[in-house]
Image (tube, rainbow, N blue to C red; front, side):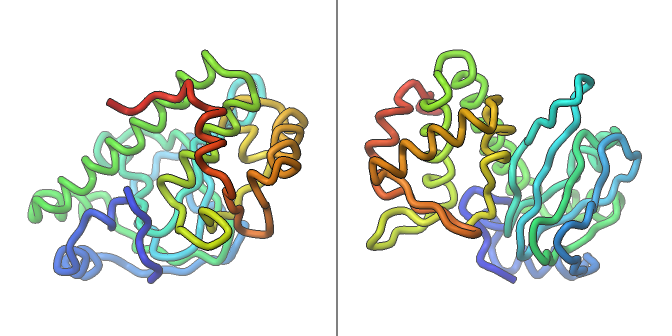
Amino acid sequence: MEQPRSGTFLHYLAPADRDFLFGRARIRKLPAGTAVMHQGDPTDHVLVLLSGWVRAYANAPDGQVVLFGLRGPGDVIGEIAALHGWPRTATIETLQVTEFAQFTHEGFLTCLHDRSAVGIALLKQFAVRLRGAEAARLNFATMDTAQRVAAFLVRLADEHGRSSPAGVVVDMPLTQQDVADSIGASRRAVARALKAFRDRELLTTGRQRFVVSAPEVLRRLGDNAPDGT
């Protein structure tokens, strides 16, 4: 299992609570490019990511792809369907070899009832995602594409980055299309913004990661982003 990322479900659980949870799960591993959930499906199992990354997206009626987010180690997915019995709101696809703990609907609800720490951790992850969704809505309404890209990269760096001599490293398989789908912009406009940031040495990109070399400069570019209060 990889170290859970900050702000994720597993991040908020103590080791004893994780052991309690995993003792009631089936551990599975799937290759890259595998759909583990499909938008509209009535399935209600819950997954907790242990290693690897997945993308959560939906197809709008007009054919546009809306990326809800990239989920990585420590994230729980599918919990809404388990809690409410609703059809899946998104398709979940693995981007890498991914290992996860799988729970049945009944098994996950039993964990919530029997271990209060599990329910509290789930609420904390809900709060993190809600804050991100609110920031995205405000950014879409008030910023141009370059500002939205800057704010998006800074948020990822704040939530998932690690410090290095070169800047803040984010180990995430993020494509230009993923950024475009996340912020509601065209891939071409995102590519122009990223190139401008690279030319100014604010950002370097590579396979499976990117490095924010000057986070405070990017933060000022996206200074319309909310502070989350």
